[in-house]
Image 1 (spheres, rainbow, N blue to C red):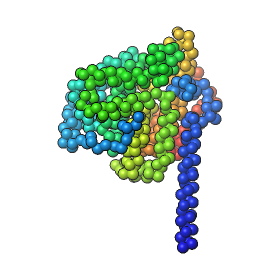
Image 2 (tube, one colour):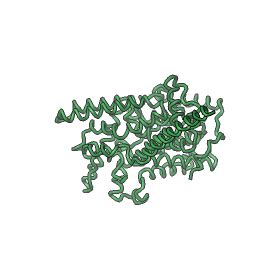
Image 3 (cartoon, rainbow, N blue to C red):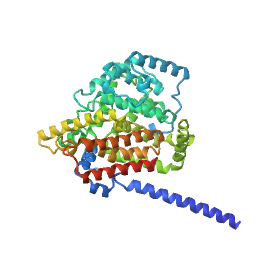
Image 4 (spheres, rainbow, N blue to C red):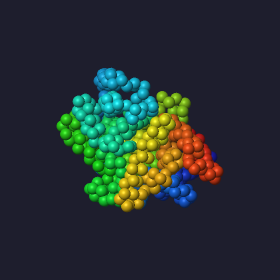
Amino acid sequence: DKENSGNAFGNETELLEKVVQKLAVLSEITMNKSVVDAETMEGLGEGDRAVIQGFQGTSSADTNMWGEEQDSDKEEDSDYEVMLSAQKTMVENAGLSLDLLNSWNLNPLELDKARNHAAAMYFVGPHNHGISFDSVVMASFLESAENGYIKAVPYHNWFHAIDVTHGVYRLLRVCAGEAYLNNSERYALLISAVCHDVGHPGLNNTFLIETAHELALRYNDKSPLENMHCARLFEFASNARCNIFATLPKQQFQDVRKICIEAILHTDNAQHFAMIKEVQMMYEVNSEVLDASREFFNEDPEEFPTREAVDCFRQPESRKLLVKLMLHMADISNSMKPFRICRIWAWQVLEEFFLQGDAERRLGVPVQALNDREKVNRQFSQVGFIEFLVSPLVFAVIKVLPPTESHADQMIQNLKTWHNAWQTDTKPPPTDTEKKALSERVSKLEQKFINVR
């Protein structure tokens, strides 16, 4: 008996130690105000600080819909097959390849208007979420959304909307979103992607606030762009010919509306580091289950997610996080695309930053560091963007959603390509000291990825 009681005491002590360790990790995540630690920030050069500030701006830095998952919106297999067949026919008639849509090689900038429209219809189609709608109404909604984007804006335009909607569609597929997100959540997520930047003027929130823009005044300086995007989405849908929510019962519409608003508001990059901490917390609380799920995935990708992981993902707070995470990750996914596509989008976003910098200079307001076309080194800025902003999120996400590890791998390849381009294209050439410093940073990030894998 004494031996048994001793073993029991030992087991309880071991369990208590694990609990204390986990609480310590959770406490550290909670207390850290930034993923970039103070010591690292202190040692950053002006260019690196510009990347972080430019990404986040210079801001100092009802839950019924997320209740227990309902089974009321199940889809009939026969209906699904009919829907899928119709969608495939529509895509093929537009001259698009399903293989292309189901890969990361799609670049909407290389498609004409008709093909982008067909791609959007396919991404938001009922076969991806199980909610029926009038296809003519959806076509009108997409046309209104396209017209709502400003063509002259280099980056935050209709092509970016299609790109992000494609990213959400792909993440839902590769991460088996249908196993833990219900129909309303998936529908809301895809529609949010379509409109997440509608009406974007090519100016960031910091500029709008600094210049007392009408949007900043209307929304009291709180995510003015994202609030406007949400409002525009539901303005479109308030028109009968564009009301893609007309088939939904009142309660389901209210749920979808709340999900859309929550997801779009969290595309504000000021929320970025808080979201990373949420993902880290989710992992630490469920590490045993998620580690096991990842092991199964590594042995057989078809085994993801495990039943235990699904139970974890189906928790209300987990679903709430996963919805906004998928939209945000798709929104900043350019660094995880094949380099040819990654480079095109990088040039687009930098040109938009530079145009804002030109406007800041004309208005006599401070030129945000990443917006000065005379000072910013394009390749160097992309290294910093990956190192300080994209990689912390991706490294946290792959512990929860292991199918995203391939995105991390592509991101590291792109990092090395940007690094090489910086060394060869920079004029005047970087000094040996500068080369050594950046090489060490790149190597350090590669090692981090190896440790996370």
